[in-house]
Length: 470
Image (cartoon, rainbow, N blue to C red; front, top):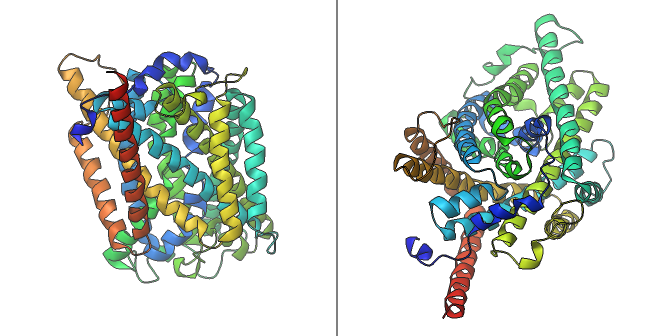
Protein backbone atom coordinates (compact mmCIF):
# COMPACT_ATOMS: atom_id res chain seq x y z
CA UNK A 1 0.00 0.00 0.00
CA UNK A 2 2.97 2.32 0.50
CA UNK A 3 3.05 3.19 -3.19
CA UNK A 4 -0.41 4.63 -2.91
CA UNK A 5 0.83 7.46 -0.71
CA UNK A 6 3.89 8.47 -2.75
CA UNK A 7 1.95 11.27 -4.40
CA UNK A 8 -0.40 12.83 -1.88
CA UNK A 9 -3.83 14.08 -2.72
CA UNK A 10 -5.42 16.98 -0.82
CA UNK A 11 -5.18 16.01 2.84
CA UNK A 12 -7.96 15.48 5.32
CA UNK A 13 -5.79 17.53 7.64
CA UNK A 14 -6.76 20.61 5.65
CA UNK A 15 -10.20 20.16 7.15
CA UNK A 16 -8.76 21.05 10.53
CA UNK A 17 -8.51 24.66 9.52
CA UNK A 18 -12.13 24.67 8.45
CA UNK A 19 -13.59 23.23 11.63
CA UNK A 20 -14.48 26.78 12.52
CA UNK A 21 -17.50 26.25 10.26
CA UNK A 22 -18.88 23.83 12.84
CA UNK A 23 -20.24 25.11 16.13
CA UNK A 24 -18.46 24.06 19.34
CA UNK A 25 -21.81 23.51 21.01
CA UNK A 26 -21.21 20.20 22.83
CA UNK A 27 -20.80 20.58 26.57
CA UNK A 28 -19.08 18.17 28.95
CA UNK A 29 -22.31 16.35 29.89
CA UNK A 30 -23.15 15.88 26.19
CA UNK A 31 -19.77 14.32 25.50
CA UNK A 32 -20.00 11.99 28.50
CA UNK A 33 -23.36 10.61 27.41
CA UNK A 34 -22.44 10.42 23.73
CA UNK A 35 -19.75 8.02 24.96
CA UNK A 36 -22.55 5.88 26.37
CA UNK A 37 -25.11 6.39 23.62
CA UNK A 38 -22.98 5.23 20.71
CA UNK A 39 -21.99 1.96 22.36
CA UNK A 40 -25.30 0.88 23.93
CA UNK A 41 -27.81 -0.02 21.25
CA UNK A 42 -28.93 -3.04 19.27
CA UNK A 43 -25.65 -4.84 19.95
CA UNK A 44 -26.48 -5.13 23.65
CA UNK A 45 -30.26 -5.18 23.65
CA UNK A 46 -30.89 -7.42 20.63
CA UNK A 47 -27.56 -8.89 19.49
CA UNK A 48 -26.80 -10.23 22.98
CA UNK A 49 -29.65 -12.72 22.58
CA UNK A 50 -27.89 -14.32 19.63
CA UNK A 51 -24.57 -14.28 21.47
CA UNK A 52 -26.05 -15.96 24.57
CA UNK A 53 -27.41 -18.78 22.40
CA UNK A 54 -23.95 -19.34 20.88
CA UNK A 55 -21.79 -19.24 24.02
CA UNK A 56 -24.02 -19.45 27.09
CA UNK A 57 -22.75 -17.80 30.29
CA UNK A 58 -19.19 -17.99 28.91
CA UNK A 59 -20.23 -15.00 26.81
CA UNK A 60 -19.31 -12.88 29.83
CA UNK A 61 -15.66 -13.72 29.18
CA UNK A 62 -16.03 -12.57 25.57
CA UNK A 63 -17.45 -9.25 26.73
CA UNK A 64 -14.77 -8.81 29.39
CA UNK A 65 -11.85 -9.42 27.00
CA UNK A 66 -13.44 -7.43 24.17
CA UNK A 67 -14.22 -4.59 26.56
CA UNK A 68 -10.63 -4.32 27.74
CA UNK A 69 -9.35 -4.29 24.16
CA UNK A 70 -11.89 -1.64 23.17
CA UNK A 71 -10.82 0.45 26.16
CA UNK A 72 -7.23 0.37 24.88
CA UNK A 73 -8.45 1.45 21.42
CA UNK A 74 -10.38 4.29 23.05
CA UNK A 75 -7.32 5.44 24.98
CA UNK A 76 -5.23 5.43 21.78
CA UNK A 77 -7.88 7.55 20.06
CA UNK A 78 -8.16 9.77 23.13
CA UNK A 79 -4.45 10.53 23.02
CA UNK A 80 -4.70 11.46 19.35
CA UNK A 81 -7.84 13.55 19.95
CA UNK A 82 -6.17 15.57 22.72
CA UNK A 83 -3.13 16.04 20.49
CA UNK A 84 -5.29 17.49 17.70
CA UNK A 85 -9.09 17.78 18.20
CA UNK A 86 -10.61 17.93 14.70
CA UNK A 87 -13.84 16.67 13.16
CA UNK A 88 -11.98 14.36 10.75
CA UNK A 89 -10.64 12.45 13.78
CA UNK A 90 -9.13 9.05 12.96
CA UNK A 91 -9.37 9.61 9.19
CA UNK A 92 -7.31 12.76 9.70
CA UNK A 93 -4.81 10.92 11.91
CA UNK A 94 -4.53 8.11 9.35
CA UNK A 95 -3.77 10.70 6.70
CA UNK A 96 -1.08 12.27 8.88
CA UNK A 97 0.65 9.20 10.28
CA UNK A 98 0.05 6.48 7.66
CA UNK A 99 -0.63 8.17 4.31
CA UNK A 100 -3.34 9.94 2.33
CA UNK A 101 -4.57 6.59 0.98
CA UNK A 102 -5.31 5.49 4.54
CA UNK A 103 -7.21 8.68 5.30
CA UNK A 104 -9.28 8.29 2.14
CA UNK A 105 -10.15 4.63 2.75
CA UNK A 106 -10.85 5.19 6.44
CA UNK A 107 -13.05 8.25 5.98
CA UNK A 108 -15.31 6.63 3.42
CA UNK A 109 -15.32 3.26 5.19
CA UNK A 110 -16.35 4.82 8.48
CA UNK A 111 -19.12 6.73 6.73
CA UNK A 112 -20.45 3.44 5.33
CA UNK A 113 -19.92 1.79 8.73
CA UNK A 114 -22.36 4.16 10.42
CA UNK A 115 -24.83 4.04 7.55
CA UNK A 116 -24.97 0.25 8.03
CA UNK A 117 -25.08 0.63 11.81
CA UNK A 118 -28.02 3.02 11.51
CA UNK A 119 -29.77 0.53 9.23
CA UNK A 120 -29.24 -2.15 11.90
CA UNK A 121 -30.71 0.16 14.54
CA UNK A 122 -33.65 1.04 12.27
CA UNK A 123 -34.29 -2.69 11.83
CA UNK A 124 -34.06 -3.22 15.58
CA UNK A 125 -36.65 -0.48 16.21
CA UNK A 126 -39.08 -2.27 13.89
CA UNK A 127 -38.41 -5.59 15.63
CA UNK A 128 -38.99 -4.06 19.07
CA UNK A 129 -42.33 -2.61 18.01
CA UNK A 130 -43.53 -6.15 17.32
CA UNK A 131 -43.77 -6.57 21.10
CA UNK A 132 -46.81 -4.27 21.08
CA UNK A 133 -47.90 -4.53 17.45
CA UNK A 134 -47.03 -7.97 16.05
CA UNK A 135 -48.66 -7.25 12.68
CA UNK A 136 -47.03 -3.83 12.17
CA UNK A 137 -44.69 -3.85 9.13
CA UNK A 138 -41.10 -3.52 10.31
CA UNK A 139 -40.26 -0.60 8.03
CA UNK A 140 -42.89 1.83 9.40
CA UNK A 141 -41.35 2.46 12.85
CA UNK A 142 -37.92 2.72 11.21
CA UNK A 143 -39.12 5.38 8.78
CA UNK A 144 -40.72 7.40 11.59
CA UNK A 145 -37.50 7.26 13.64
CA UNK A 146 -35.33 8.40 10.72
CA UNK A 147 -37.65 11.32 9.92
CA UNK A 148 -37.79 12.52 13.54
CA UNK A 149 -34.04 12.27 14.14
CA UNK A 150 -33.22 13.92 10.81
CA UNK A 151 -35.38 16.92 11.72
CA UNK A 152 -33.68 17.25 15.09
CA UNK A 153 -30.15 16.92 13.68
CA UNK A 154 -30.84 19.63 11.11
CA UNK A 155 -31.50 22.24 13.79
CA UNK A 156 -28.20 22.45 15.71
CA UNK A 157 -25.41 20.31 17.14
CA UNK A 158 -26.49 21.36 20.62
CA UNK A 159 -29.92 19.83 20.00
CA UNK A 160 -28.22 16.62 18.86
CA UNK A 161 -26.26 16.69 22.12
CA UNK A 162 -29.41 17.27 24.18
CA UNK A 163 -31.33 14.46 22.48
CA UNK A 164 -28.40 12.10 22.92
CA UNK A 165 -28.01 13.13 26.56
CA UNK A 166 -31.62 12.31 27.44
CA UNK A 167 -31.84 9.13 25.36
CA UNK A 168 -28.61 7.88 26.90
CA UNK A 169 -29.81 8.86 30.37
CA UNK A 170 -32.93 6.73 29.87
CA UNK A 171 -30.68 3.78 29.02
CA UNK A 172 -28.42 4.33 32.00
CA UNK A 173 -31.24 4.66 34.54
CA UNK A 174 -33.11 1.66 33.15
CA UNK A 175 -30.12 -0.68 33.00
CA UNK A 176 -29.10 0.27 36.53
CA UNK A 177 -32.70 -0.22 37.71
CA UNK A 178 -32.88 -3.57 35.92
CA UNK A 179 -29.66 -4.71 37.60
CA UNK A 180 -30.96 -3.55 40.98
CA UNK A 181 -34.37 -5.21 40.58
CA UNK A 182 -32.77 -8.36 39.22
CA UNK A 183 -30.41 -8.61 42.19
CA UNK A 184 -33.34 -8.05 44.57
CA UNK A 185 -35.23 -10.91 42.88
CA UNK A 186 -32.22 -13.22 42.93
CA UNK A 187 -31.06 -12.47 46.47
CA UNK A 188 -34.33 -11.81 48.29
CA UNK A 189 -37.04 -13.33 46.06
CA UNK A 190 -38.69 -9.96 45.48
CA UNK A 191 -41.43 -10.11 42.86
CA UNK A 192 -41.19 -13.86 42.56
CA UNK A 193 -38.22 -15.23 40.64
CA UNK A 194 -38.73 -17.91 37.98
CA UNK A 195 -38.29 -21.48 39.13
CA UNK A 196 -34.64 -22.19 39.80
CA UNK A 197 -33.65 -18.53 39.36
CA UNK A 198 -30.28 -17.61 40.89
CA UNK A 199 -26.59 -17.29 40.17
CA UNK A 200 -26.42 -21.08 39.89
CA UNK A 201 -28.01 -20.65 36.45
CA UNK A 202 -24.60 -19.45 35.30
CA UNK A 203 -23.14 -22.96 35.66
CA UNK A 204 -26.06 -25.35 36.11
CA UNK A 205 -27.03 -25.83 32.48
CA UNK A 206 -24.02 -27.43 30.86
CA UNK A 207 -21.44 -25.50 32.86
CA UNK A 208 -20.11 -21.96 32.51
CA UNK A 209 -18.78 -22.86 29.04
CA UNK A 210 -21.59 -25.10 27.73
CA UNK A 211 -20.50 -24.69 24.11
CA UNK A 212 -16.79 -25.02 24.87
CA UNK A 213 -14.09 -22.86 23.35
CA UNK A 214 -15.79 -23.02 19.96
CA UNK A 215 -18.83 -21.26 21.43
CA UNK A 216 -16.63 -18.49 22.82
CA UNK A 217 -14.97 -17.94 19.45
CA UNK A 218 -18.23 -18.00 17.51
CA UNK A 219 -19.83 -15.40 19.82
CA UNK A 220 -16.74 -13.19 19.93
CA UNK A 221 -17.59 -11.07 16.84
CA UNK A 222 -21.04 -10.30 18.27
CA UNK A 223 -19.47 -9.14 21.52
CA UNK A 224 -17.00 -6.97 19.60
CA UNK A 225 -19.81 -5.49 17.51
CA UNK A 226 -21.63 -4.46 20.68
CA UNK A 227 -18.89 -1.97 21.51
CA UNK A 228 -19.00 -0.28 18.13
CA UNK A 229 -19.66 3.42 18.62
CA UNK A 230 -17.06 4.35 21.22
CA UNK A 231 -14.91 5.86 18.46
CA UNK A 232 -17.62 8.51 17.80
CA UNK A 233 -16.08 10.39 20.70
CA UNK A 234 -13.22 11.27 18.35
CA UNK A 235 -15.65 12.95 15.96
CA UNK A 236 -17.03 15.15 18.74
CA UNK A 237 -13.60 16.72 19.26
CA UNK A 238 -14.16 19.38 16.59
CA UNK A 239 -17.42 20.52 18.21
CA UNK A 240 -16.59 20.21 21.91
CA UNK A 241 -16.20 23.39 23.94
CA UNK A 242 -13.35 22.14 26.15
CA UNK A 243 -11.88 19.03 24.48
CA UNK A 244 -8.81 18.93 26.74
CA UNK A 245 -11.05 18.41 29.78
CA UNK A 246 -14.11 16.61 28.39
CA UNK A 247 -12.45 14.02 26.14
CA UNK A 248 -10.06 12.39 28.67
CA UNK A 249 -12.91 12.08 31.19
CA UNK A 250 -15.19 10.46 28.59
CA UNK A 251 -12.54 8.05 27.30
CA UNK A 252 -11.51 7.00 30.82
CA UNK A 253 -15.13 6.31 31.78
CA UNK A 254 -15.59 3.77 28.99
CA UNK A 255 -14.10 0.84 30.93
CA UNK A 256 -16.45 1.31 33.88
CA UNK A 257 -19.48 1.58 31.63
CA UNK A 258 -18.52 -1.59 29.80
CA UNK A 259 -18.36 -3.64 32.99
CA UNK A 260 -21.54 -2.19 34.51
CA UNK A 261 -23.81 -2.02 31.48
CA UNK A 262 -22.67 -5.11 29.62
CA UNK A 263 -21.23 -7.61 32.05
CA UNK A 264 -23.41 -6.55 34.97
CA UNK A 265 -26.65 -6.57 32.98
CA UNK A 266 -25.99 -9.87 31.19
CA UNK A 267 -24.92 -11.56 34.42
CA UNK A 268 -28.23 -10.63 36.03
CA UNK A 269 -30.22 -11.73 32.97
CA UNK A 270 -28.60 -15.17 32.78
CA UNK A 271 -28.91 -15.60 36.54
CA UNK A 272 -32.62 -14.78 36.44
CA UNK A 273 -33.40 -17.23 33.68
CA UNK A 274 -31.52 -20.22 32.21
CA UNK A 275 -29.52 -19.13 29.18
CA UNK A 276 -30.75 -22.05 27.06
CA UNK A 277 -34.39 -21.01 27.45
CA UNK A 278 -33.97 -17.49 26.10
CA UNK A 279 -35.16 -16.77 22.56
CA UNK A 280 -32.10 -15.73 20.48
CA UNK A 281 -34.31 -13.72 18.09
CA UNK A 282 -35.78 -11.51 20.85
CA UNK A 283 -34.31 -9.05 23.32
CA UNK A 284 -33.31 -10.97 26.46
CA UNK A 285 -34.02 -7.82 28.49
CA UNK A 286 -37.69 -7.87 27.51
CA UNK A 287 -38.03 -11.64 27.68
CA UNK A 288 -36.70 -11.97 31.23
CA UNK A 289 -39.09 -9.44 32.73
CA UNK A 290 -42.05 -10.80 30.80
CA UNK A 291 -41.36 -14.33 32.05
CA UNK A 292 -40.97 -13.48 35.73
CA UNK A 293 -44.50 -12.08 35.88
CA UNK A 294 -43.73 -8.38 35.48
CA UNK A 295 -45.33 -7.55 32.11
CA UNK A 296 -45.47 -3.81 32.90
CA UNK A 297 -41.71 -3.83 33.46
CA UNK A 298 -41.22 -5.73 30.22
CA UNK A 299 -43.18 -3.05 28.35
CA UNK A 300 -41.05 -0.35 29.95
CA UNK A 301 -37.87 -2.19 29.01
CA UNK A 302 -39.15 -2.50 25.45
CA UNK A 303 -39.66 1.26 25.34
CA UNK A 304 -36.14 1.72 26.64
CA UNK A 305 -34.58 -0.55 24.03
CA UNK A 306 -36.42 1.42 21.35
CA UNK A 307 -34.95 4.62 22.78
CA UNK A 308 -31.53 2.91 22.88
CA UNK A 309 -31.72 2.01 19.20
CA UNK A 310 -32.94 5.54 18.41
CA UNK A 311 -29.99 6.92 20.36
CA UNK A 312 -27.51 4.88 18.33
CA UNK A 313 -29.23 5.91 15.09
CA UNK A 314 -29.00 9.53 16.24
CA UNK A 315 -25.29 9.06 16.85
CA UNK A 316 -24.99 7.51 13.39
CA UNK A 317 -26.48 10.60 11.76
CA UNK A 318 -23.99 12.76 13.61
CA UNK A 319 -21.01 10.53 12.82
CA UNK A 320 -21.73 10.08 9.11
CA UNK A 321 -22.42 13.77 8.49
CA UNK A 322 -19.27 14.96 10.31
CA UNK A 323 -16.99 12.46 8.63
CA UNK A 324 -18.44 13.29 5.22
CA UNK A 325 -18.03 17.01 5.95
CA UNK A 326 -14.35 16.53 6.85
CA UNK A 327 -13.82 14.52 3.67
CA UNK A 328 -15.52 17.20 1.58
CA UNK A 329 -13.36 19.94 3.13
CA UNK A 330 -10.33 17.88 2.16
CA UNK A 331 -11.67 17.48 -1.40
CA UNK A 332 -11.89 13.73 -0.87
CA UNK A 333 -15.66 13.93 -1.24
CA UNK A 334 -17.70 16.14 -3.61
CA UNK A 335 -16.82 19.78 -2.73
CA UNK A 336 -20.48 20.92 -2.65
CA UNK A 337 -20.83 18.89 0.56
CA UNK A 338 -18.39 21.23 2.35
CA UNK A 339 -21.28 23.44 3.42
CA UNK A 340 -22.90 24.32 6.73
CA UNK A 341 -26.29 25.95 7.13
CA UNK A 342 -26.96 29.08 9.18
CA UNK A 343 -27.10 26.91 12.32
CA UNK A 344 -23.60 25.60 11.54
CA UNK A 345 -24.85 22.10 10.72
CA UNK A 346 -23.36 20.25 7.67
CA UNK A 347 -26.85 19.93 6.23
CA UNK A 348 -25.93 18.55 2.80
CA UNK A 349 -23.77 15.82 4.31
CA UNK A 350 -26.58 14.99 6.72
CA UNK A 351 -29.08 14.77 3.85
CA UNK A 352 -26.84 12.39 1.87
CA UNK A 353 -26.34 10.13 4.88
CA UNK A 354 -30.04 10.06 5.74
CA UNK A 355 -30.87 9.20 2.13
CA UNK A 356 -28.68 6.12 2.45
CA UNK A 357 -30.40 5.23 5.72
CA UNK A 358 -33.72 5.38 3.88
CA UNK A 359 -32.36 2.58 1.70
CA UNK A 360 -32.32 0.61 4.95
CA UNK A 361 -35.99 1.41 5.45
CA UNK A 362 -36.65 0.02 1.96
CA UNK A 363 -34.70 -3.14 2.77
CA UNK A 364 -36.79 -3.56 5.91
CA UNK A 365 -39.77 -3.62 3.57
CA UNK A 366 -38.19 -6.06 1.11
CA UNK A 367 -36.20 -8.44 3.39
CA UNK A 368 -37.25 -7.70 7.00
CA UNK A 369 -36.02 -10.98 8.46
CA UNK A 370 -32.44 -10.79 7.09
CA UNK A 371 -31.54 -7.11 7.09
CA UNK A 372 -30.46 -6.80 10.75
CA UNK A 373 -27.98 -9.69 10.54
CA UNK A 374 -26.55 -8.50 7.20
CA UNK A 375 -26.13 -4.92 8.40
CA UNK A 376 -24.52 -6.04 11.67
CA UNK A 377 -22.02 -8.26 9.85
CA UNK A 378 -21.10 -5.46 7.44
CA UNK A 379 -20.59 -3.03 10.31
CA UNK A 380 -18.23 -5.40 12.09
CA UNK A 381 -15.95 -5.79 9.06
CA UNK A 382 -15.64 -2.01 8.62
CA UNK A 383 -15.38 -1.41 12.36
CA UNK A 384 -12.34 -3.68 12.64
CA UNK A 385 -10.67 -1.69 9.87
CA UNK A 386 -11.37 1.60 11.67
CA UNK A 387 -10.11 0.35 15.02
CA UNK A 388 -7.00 -1.11 13.41
CA UNK A 389 -6.29 2.21 11.68
CA UNK A 390 -6.65 4.07 15.00
CA UNK A 391 -4.09 1.82 16.66
CA UNK A 392 -1.62 1.99 13.74
CA UNK A 393 -2.02 5.78 13.58
CA UNK A 394 -1.27 5.96 17.27
CA UNK A 395 1.94 3.98 16.70
CA UNK A 396 2.91 6.55 14.07
CA UNK A 397 2.14 9.43 16.44
CA UNK A 398 4.26 7.92 19.22
CA UNK A 399 7.16 7.44 16.78
CA UNK A 400 6.84 11.10 15.80
CA UNK A 401 6.84 12.13 19.46
CA UNK A 402 10.00 10.11 20.16
CA UNK A 403 11.66 11.75 17.15
CA UNK A 404 10.72 15.19 18.45
CA UNK A 405 8.50 15.91 15.43
CA UNK A 406 5.22 16.06 17.39
CA UNK A 407 4.40 17.34 20.88
CA UNK A 408 3.49 14.81 23.58
CA UNK A 409 0.23 15.08 25.54
CA UNK A 410 -0.57 14.18 29.12
CA UNK A 411 -3.38 11.74 28.24
CA UNK A 412 -1.63 8.60 26.98
CA UNK A 413 -2.35 5.00 26.06
CA UNK A 414 -0.98 2.83 28.91
CA UNK A 415 1.67 0.29 27.94
CA UNK A 416 2.23 1.53 24.39
CA UNK A 417 3.58 0.30 22.02
CA UNK A 418 3.12 -3.22 23.47
CA UNK A 419 -0.61 -2.66 23.98
CA UNK A 420 -0.93 -1.52 20.37
CA UNK A 421 0.33 -4.88 19.17
CA UNK A 422 -1.91 -6.76 21.61
CA UNK A 423 -4.93 -4.94 20.18
CA UNK A 424 -3.89 -5.63 16.59
CA UNK A 425 -3.40 -9.33 17.40
CA UNK A 426 -6.88 -9.47 18.94
CA UNK A 427 -8.45 -7.80 15.91
CA UNK A 428 -6.62 -10.27 13.69
CA UNK A 429 -8.10 -13.15 15.70
CA UNK A 430 -11.61 -11.70 15.24
CA UNK A 431 -11.00 -11.54 11.49
CA UNK A 432 -10.01 -15.22 11.46
CA UNK A 433 -13.15 -16.18 13.41
CA UNK A 434 -15.31 -14.25 10.98
CA UNK A 435 -13.60 -15.88 8.00
CA UNK A 436 -14.34 -19.34 9.42
CA UNK A 437 -18.00 -18.57 10.16
CA UNK A 438 -20.14 -19.18 7.03
CA UNK A 439 -22.74 -16.73 8.29
CA UNK A 440 -20.20 -13.91 8.55
CA UNK A 441 -18.07 -14.77 5.54
CA UNK A 442 -20.27 -12.59 3.36
CA UNK A 443 -18.81 -9.57 5.18
CA UNK A 444 -15.40 -10.38 3.67
CA UNK A 445 -16.78 -10.57 0.17
CA UNK A 446 -18.57 -7.25 0.61
CA UNK A 447 -15.60 -5.59 2.29
CA UNK A 448 -13.23 -6.83 -0.42
CA UNK A 449 -15.41 -5.29 -3.13
CA UNK A 450 -15.75 -2.06 -1.14
CA UNK A 451 -12.01 -1.59 -0.54
CA UNK A 452 -11.13 -2.57 -4.10
CA UNK A 453 -13.54 0.09 -5.37
CA UNK A 454 -12.13 2.72 -2.98
CA UNK A 455 -8.54 1.95 -4.02
CA UNK A 456 -9.51 2.21 -7.70
CA UNK A 457 -11.19 5.57 -7.06
CA UNK A 458 -8.19 6.80 -5.07
CA UNK A 459 -5.73 5.84 -7.83
CA UNK A 460 -7.94 7.42 -10.48
CA UNK A 461 -8.12 10.66 -8.49
CA UNK A 462 -4.36 10.61 -7.98
CA UNK A 463 -3.83 10.18 -11.72
CA UNK A 464 -6.23 13.03 -12.56
CA UNK A 465 -4.55 15.21 -9.94
CA UNK A 466 -1.12 14.47 -11.41
CA UNK A 467 -2.25 15.39 -14.96
CA UNK A 468 -3.84 18.58 -13.67
CA UNK A 469 -0.64 19.71 -11.99
CA UNK A 470 1.45 19.45 -15.17
